[in-house]
Length: 178
Image (cartoon, rainbow, N blue to C red; front, top):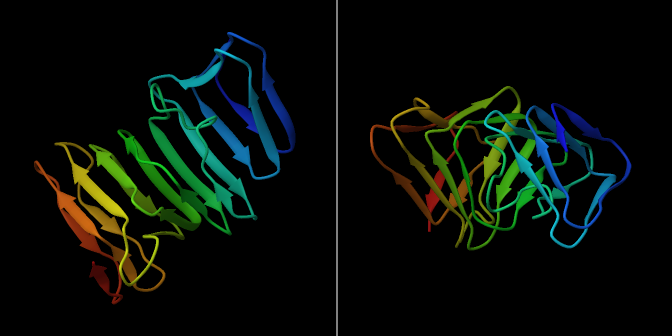
């Protein structure tokens, strides 16, 4: 099954056994929706696939909507209460922070490999300001300068910058590297 766009505002998205759902456009996932995958089933994303977290209740990212392989190329955080990433992931397209805070979890690496980062009101943070164990890598030859938007002091254990990329901090807040 292939879809260009899918909005899961409430209810349950259930995939029967051995079904691959390919999303070529945007999967708009609201916090009240739920995903159940049958045995051998997966959600995968096409070359322009976007996962957008929407709503107003804190959302923890899950393997069901953000798989290890063939995951979303683009991420959009449009959740006023924020989204937490409990596992390492790589973004290769763009990360758009519309509203809310995207929190990199404990002992988790967020890798922006050629990905751009833009904010029109959203923020990024580590799991703690002091003694953080969250890591951010910005690498590749595309994506431009990554300006880290913060809504206060941000704590990360490591910020790794590679290839031709550059990182800047937005505002007058502090970046604490633990």
